[in-house]
Image 1 (cartoon, rainbow, N blue to C red):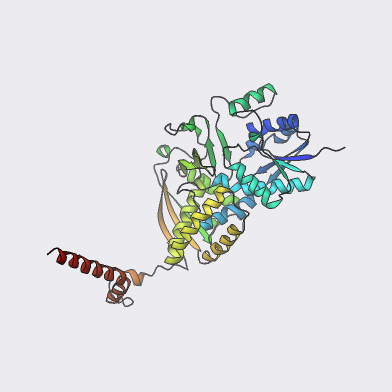
Image 2: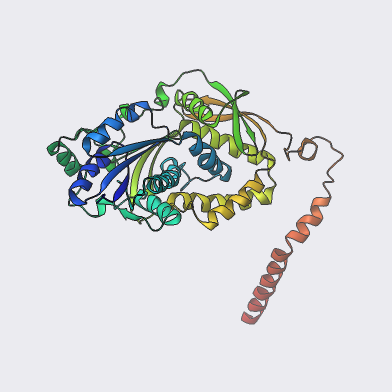
Length: 410
């Protein structure tokens, strides 16, 4: 009788390398590995097939999701303006629903009855993966080894790997938890668990130290069509190539480093280090273009939507009716967000050097301090009188009450 199959979200890192062997010992499943290529780099993908098979998987699917990730997940996030807690550009979070979606697709393809992942019981990723599975195929069993096994932490995992002859990509000296995709790299764990300790200088991979960046500023332009970036310095690019090129440009100027203590979905605070060089440029330019093209009330209302959208991505609520409904609103807001933003990059800083859009609502004739024929300054008096009427009435009432009180004392 054929064994039931489980599809494991497999990165080849410490946790999932151990999980393959652990699933063999714990469950009588045939293990199918699924690796999502989301731009983590060839070095992390090299040799994965041989490693997965050697540690016990019957087969592995390595899925190239880079284009889909940028086109259908990252760029809609850019359009929304989502930033979690004012700093985090959601690099890890935005990839999780897509990986969960592909996990379900592979499970259905091979006839698996279960899926498994290597997210810990303390983190956000367990929620993100499992919400995706529940939304797309709630009949699949979900196995989360970190919530079941007796291993207490990464040191135990390293000991388990060594005792079972499993090669691992981390050491006890630098036990960082690293997540990388096209949009960013995140670092957690090890010495970083001390929020009072500065990261080691050689930890960063996408950005130079701003103090070591060139002494000469570099100019770059990003062009958008309906809120979607499509060209760098006037040259049209595919979504993947555009992000890759901006990563290089921003990275050499030390742009895109974030060190923050954030609120996880489960309630605890955690410290994370993020590198998002190209994403920082794209988000900055998109925001500047919205300032230039969006109506005031629309922009202010959209700021609230952006906060909610960021929270939903962080919490793993991508496959929900609310996110889909918010997308419809966001797409409407982006109809005129077309144009080009010029920027100067210098030692970790970004400054606007130019703005161009056929849809700008900036009207020189209205705002000039010189003589103009469009705006009657005397009209402002009536506006102030009417808009300030509630304050005027309240002030009159308070003065009358105070006079009455003083009269009573006399």
